[in-house]
Amino acid sequence: MDNFLRGFMDKEFKIGQITFDLLDLLLMAGMSVSGLLIRFVFRTVVTDDWTIFWEPWIEKFSQGGFHALALDFYDYAPPFMYILYFISKLPMNAMTAYKGICCIFDFIAAVTAAGIIYDCTRSKIRAMGVYSIFMIMPTMIANSALWAQCDIIYTTLVLLSILFLFKNKPNLSLICYGIAFAFKLQTLFIFPLFIILWAKNKLKLKHFLWIVVMYFVAILPAWLAGRPLIELINIYVEQGTQDAYSLSLKWSNIYQLYGSTFFIQEYEKAGIWLILGILMLIMFFMAYRKYELNKELILLVGFFFAMLTAYFLPHMHERYGFLADIFAILYAFTTIKRFYYPLVHIMLSFSAYMEYLSKTFAGPIPYYALVELALIVLAGLEIYSYITGERDKRIMKREAVNG
Image (spheres, helix red, strand yellow):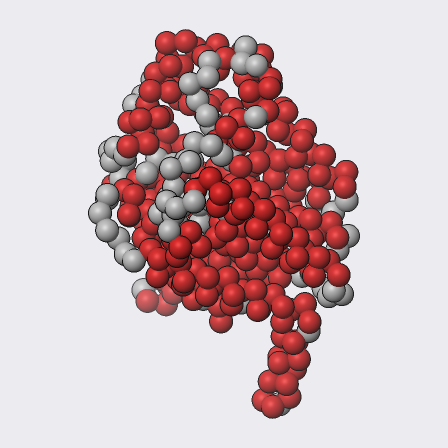
């Protein structure tokens, strides 16, 4: 019997290009069920964002139908409102439907992340590992199932953009990125990465037109419903003025070090120009040097820019480290020695989540801001070692010593 069961466990199944044995599939199924049940636990939790925003907005659609899109009660991008309109038509609890849709994107993101890691490493074990981590990732679960936020939607589209980029499909990559931008302005956190990809001849200017095209396609239904086009075009500008009472909404960035409620108007403008200046310096250096922009480096640069931009931009919310959480995990699975990147960053993100959700003290955020700065410096130095060839020299030296 033992030999029969062991032989049965070794039975192979081919899915796409990858061959799995039964034990592999059992692991994936077990992690999927575990992730689903964790999310199920939080299905009835009601947060302030749901009570203040999503529920009343869904009620507006229940009363006014599609033409409610013409009203100015919402300050989110129209594609998100289309989802709320769809939910208003479903014969089920609106919050359950909303969280359910976000959790579906959790699973799509996990599969996409596994595809990215397999494309980078050709390792089935690492691809399965990243899928499993996504299933139990604290900030992902809290964002979708607990908080009822939608960050996973644009993040999934960013992941698809990276996957298509790795498969040398630039049009599909920028289409996905354009849709992501149409959902959330925070997509711009990693836009410098795409500029560097253009500088290194991985993309062409014509590919960037997809961002504009997809944004206008996304706002078209709301425009047809009756909302003025200029309001739809400027909706992200209006979002930037919503949080003028604090330079940082519990996110661990530079304003936590110097005070997030002082010189708000001055630092708000100065902070935007500061990060633009920093990004231009970094992009110039990365475009100027000659090096191979490989897949692992792309993931590291994505992680770096996702952290750096949120660190200096004013009015950053608690969950704006979510994209960096994702890229930290991806890079760690290509470079195992950097396993501490996601461990530390997700801890910082989750602490910010709990500071908001529990309305209690969740940690010394100014000190966390120093930890975040340390991660930025470490990732920046690692990028520098890639670009200058120091990393390759260390690897060759180590191999020579071991040989």
